[in-house]
Amino acid sequence: MPALTVLMPVYNAEKFLAEAIDSILQQTFADFEFIIIDDGSEDSTAAIVASYSDTRIRFVQNERNLGISATLNKGIILAAAPLIARMDADDISCPERLQKQFEYMQANPDCAMVSSLVKVITEDGQLVRVDQFRSEFFYYNLTFICWIYHPTVMYRKAAVEEAGMYAVPYAEDFELFWQLSRRHKIYNLPEIMLHYRVSSKSLHQVLKKKEYEQAQHEQLLRNFRYYAGKNFTLPTSHIECLQHNFEPILAEASRSSVLQCLKSLDAITEGILYKENTNRNIEAIKKAAFYKRNYILTNVMKHLTKPQKAMLLISDRNLNYLSRLLKNRVRIKFKNVFSF
Image (cartoon, rainbow, N blue to C red; front, top):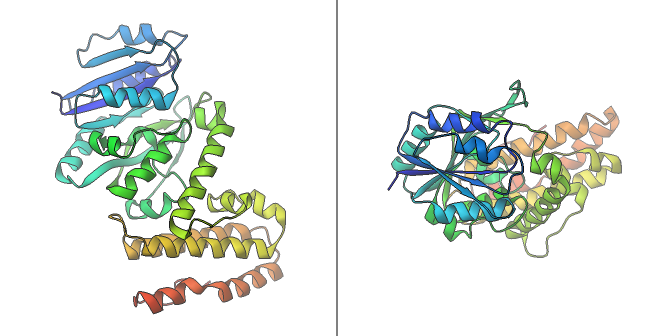
């Protein structure tokens, strides 16, 4: 049995497929099977995969297009190894990715999933950005935004099966990661281990953008209610703001709306602080909440006049009950953490 399964679904992936395959076959870690599932491609995908003679490749072709979630679940069932590394057909894994992630998972048996930083690139390989995400903030921020790049993850097959595998057709990775983080430890290695390509055929950014946005909207409401109560609700503009899309709330031109959004954020943060979880770290949650709150205020205030900024900060200071609550209930030094 191989020590590791690499799982890569492909669909009309001829443009970048060979580069993706090569980046896996050239890994410093060699004890793996490479399951490639063609989900009904109509281009030369099958011929490209068939051109490889590496015995580690297991090529599977769906009789019809099943979609990403069903195809991934099929791959999980087929996986022979207890650890599964995800890969996408338009990305590039760095040579030591599998080695470093495998070693981390071996050294940390209580961790169900490890991810990594990425270099985001254009279709022609030009640098877009490098996100400097800190692992200790992942648990808090997964409530609001999917910080984890899907093709960077390596997870335990048993934990994914326990979490229900890929249970939704859209935003399937966000759903799985959130479910895993409810039950198991997760971690992000602070190294770039994948070049993540922004493609014109990206499902969540281009082809199925509306479907993914709707699915994520529903997931976010579920996440918020998990921490803030089953009757908790907030308008779409506030949900967008908490995902750092500020245009809808700015379009309202309402200081009270911004304040209510911040109040909702404080309520969610309070719930995260007191909900039992293996990933819960009080200090990390407080820091992540402070950074998020400050980021929202900073970006909103860019579009305000000086008098409006002053009024917002004065009002926000009055609404800043979370700081007082933490001092009274947790008895942890928390001096001026929300000062502006």
